[in-house]
Amino acid sequence: MTTMTGFAQNKDLDWSRDGRDWPNSDASRFVRTRRILWHLQEMGDARAPALLLVHGTAASTHSFRDLMPRLSARFRVIAIDLPGHGFTDARDTQSLTPTGMAMAVSDLLRHLDILPVAAAGHSAGAAVLIQMAQLGGVAPTQIFGLNAALEPIQGNALFQPLARFLFLNPLTPRLLAWRATFGGTDAMLQRATGSTIGADGARCYTRLFASRRHVRAALGMMAHWDLAPLQAGLPSLAPELILIAADDDPMVPASVSTRAALRAPQASCIRFATGGHLLHEAEPDTIAALIEARCLGETAMDAQDRRRA
Image (tube, rainbow, N blue to C red):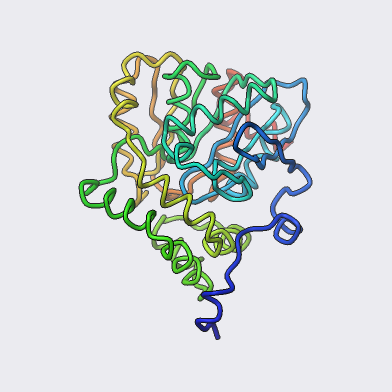
């Protein structure tokens, strides 16, 4: 039984302990740039076209655990933990804003000397990629938004000040992390996201939500998330924007992607009837085939058939 002792004892993620059974841990490494110690994973031939994967708020590289191996046959795939998330250590709040994150990711890619030809971002990760292009950072020629969170959360006039208050309260991350130790994360995820992702994914989210540092970063990201500049810049966005949305996503309505596709000059929207907010985790084969097809000029069915052969 979890007691208040657990409140005092819940721990931040530690690679020496938690990395042992982390998905794709053999592809992991750590890179330092300025004030950030990054955790990233890399798969595929270093000579292949580079493809960047960016997770959303409160997630980590684990959310691409099944997508990465499928894409690595044709791409050099790089997935990162955003500042403060997962195993990436970042202390400053500036790195939790859309602009701060976009600049930080661009700095990392320059440090690695990697110019992705394409990038896929889930939820808020898609906003980070778009901001990178808008700010003149390292920008791919194609951006895939997976249930992209490109508009303020409904009720944001109340939600964002609340998130800011919780972020500033030093007890909040510890309390929320302690609550995660009670279990039931898999059922909570299904209710909140509408997605079925399996035991391995739920296990990783449980561990993330029990980390005070990770919870604090997620709250900070929500508290500092201003999408007005992104929305204003959509009509002049240079990269091609491919938005993939699930109609049954209870967190980010598919209409958000539809509206964004109408405003950006080179944009399209592909909608799925089911899959939920974690569509890329629930249907990795389908999403990998779609990304390959759009990047390589095939049909999605051709790409899926070729990988099965």
